[in-house]
Amino acid sequence: MSNLPPPENVALPAGHLHQGTHKPTTPRRRWWLGVLGGLAILAGMLVIEHFRGEANLRAWREAMRAKGEPLPVAELLPPLPPGRTPLPRSAIVKLLRLEDLQPLADASYGPGFLYLAPGQVRSVWAEPDAEPTPWGTNTWKHLEAVLAQVSEPLGALREHLAKRTWTVAMENPSKSELPTSMTFSLISASIALRGAVQVELHRQRLDAALEHLLALLALPEDGLAGRQSVGHVGFLAMHQIAIPATWQALQATGWTDAPLAALQTAWERKWFLEETALGLAAERASTGAATFDKLREDLGTALRNAPHLILHRSMAVPSVGAPSTPDQGRWQRLGSRAVELAVFPAGIAWRVAWLDQDELHYCRSMQEAIERVRLIAAERSVAAAKAWAKRGARPVAPFRSAARSLGESGAALDRVRYCASQALLPKLESLVAAACELETLRSMVVAAVALKRHELRHGGLPADLAALVPEFLAAVPVDYQDGKPIRYHARADGTYLLYSVGDDGQDDGGVAAAAVPSGEPSTLTGGRDWVWPVATAR
Image 1 (cartoon, rainbow, N blue to C red):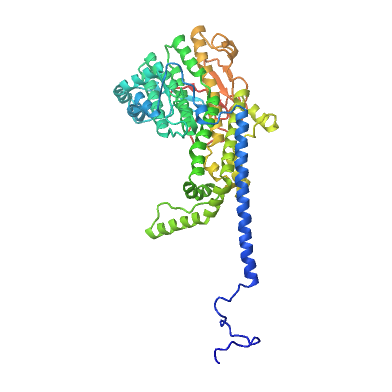
Image 2: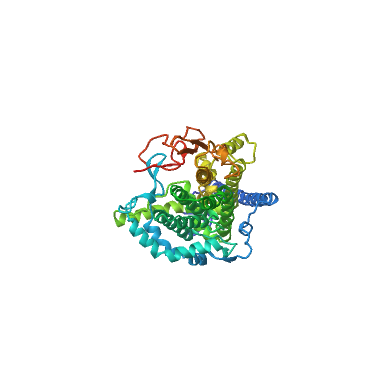
């Protein structure tokens, strides 16, 4: 009888229910249904975002193709000049023997301009032979010995640059090329050539100095440097090295018109804004192929990198630097790993829903920068281009970094949505500013060479730059900072004042001093106006 079931109205003790007969309470069931429903809605939203981003990216590409905008890397490669052999960069490094020039680059490393005061510069090559060179590391005798050691690779470099029997070839146009090591080799070669110019000027061998100077100007041409952001930074840096070398050469006596005309022509054929636009387009094409396509095709790579991309901008990563104790280092690494795991769900959402939107943001930001550069090149004025953009009269975004605007917006979702583009976008504003700066400095260099030619042929300086046209110049050089002619005034002592209004666009009458005094050394573009220096004795 003890096994009889209990009466229906008798309550059983807690925990006495038969196993398998328990049913979830109604609130718990509702909670689980709510969670599942929320996850379903979230998954649906992510799928919608995915297809929306895919469609928008495809539409943008179609719109760019309709405008004739080159998008693949293959369309951005320079055409093969007739009679030239395409060579990979690694072969060109060996052909030019760039590594062999490193001793001279190390020995001659130093500032191109030696300022005594803003706008007043010493001629490096005119320093006494018995004293150390102005940067204090080598005597002229030592530099001449180093120059003799590398005379063979220097000669081979000049010969190849003069003949140009080769051109740069990309090994695989479908993949990105990372010319970082070659860029550094080219910059070292530029420094070596600048040192050779100084040594030859010190020897008063103008023909040899001119050969090295023309080689320095020819080195970055034919796409050897300048494509993609790293290479383009090197391209601009190499010309920054050539500017003081040109100034130094103009201080020497004994020049005739023909070599100066050749030097002027070498500078006149430079177009930094156009090269910058091409470089940005190449960077966009190669990054899309190398990064976004790989993240799209390789799920494991995307999920491994997503937390790092998100943490790159949107939050601070705990320090994993050199710890004071092993335990401290272990806890720091664990903390960093915990942060990465915490943002991993956001990384999954980014890979599923926003990867195409991220690439679209990257492409649009790069296109905006390209349009800015083209607008400046068309207007030949930073100020005019900014005015056009501000009024919305041209199809170009305001002069503002897309990455900076995103970072200042405070939109956490957008910082996750566009995490890859934030990490990949180069410093667009600084690249554009550097190109505009070099265009202005190129105008000053061309004007200075033409003034030297006028002085040699006519025995004095002209009253204004218009007097150089058409005998020495096709047109008066333009100040790209405001679109007006470069400022020039002849002085009674036989020198002249040649300057740009600088990046503030204000004409301060050729004041080379900085607006805010500091302990930093003077630079060519560090003053209120950018002044072409006057040679000054110690």
